[in-house]
Amino acid sequence: MNKEECIAVEEYAKAVRANYDVKVPFFESIDYLLEKLGGNLEITELDCFDSSKLYLRTAIWEELFTVKVKPSVSREERNYEIAKKIGHLFLHTTYVDAMTEGKPLLITDDLSNTVNEAQANIFADTLVMPQDEFTKEVKQNVHDGRADMKKVAKKFGVTYDRALVRASRLNLIEW
Image 1 (cartoon, rainbow, N blue to C red):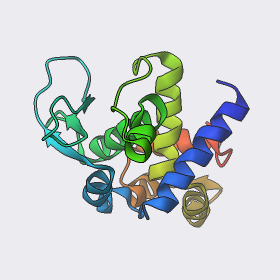
Image 2: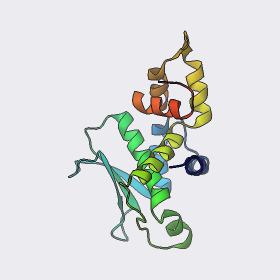
Image 3: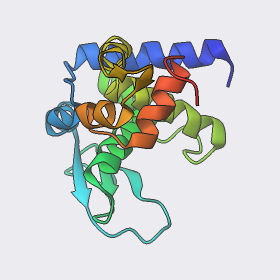
Image 4: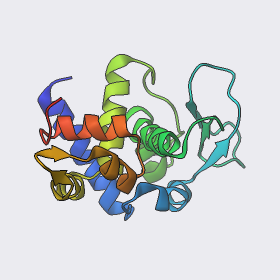
């Protein structure tokens, strides 16, 4: 994925974040956001190797979509997985057309495709760890020239690894 595509995905996530008033930490907005988007969350065993899946409505009386997450994933992983599935919803389905034009909600691309996964990750990073707040938090947690990324991760409700990836992508740290 080139830099322009990354920027476009980040801008899209920023717009979603602003439009739906997503808070930091993200987990405080999950239920509200899923409800506003017409979906729901289900914690359940999945018959696959994935830790989460996005399911679109199959009957008119169902929610528009369901994000299913295995109960064995940590709260931090669950937060991120939900954000990633919301990224797939906006980027790789007809969600916007379904909401604005009443068209059917369909998956438009392979969600497990490497490029689509990368796009969903960037979307989730931006949704869960918005650049301005994240940058400020990293800078506030620098001691002796090193950022305490465990504190940063805790603030945003994500794993240490996800916080490292976001900080690296924003050129806030080197590792």
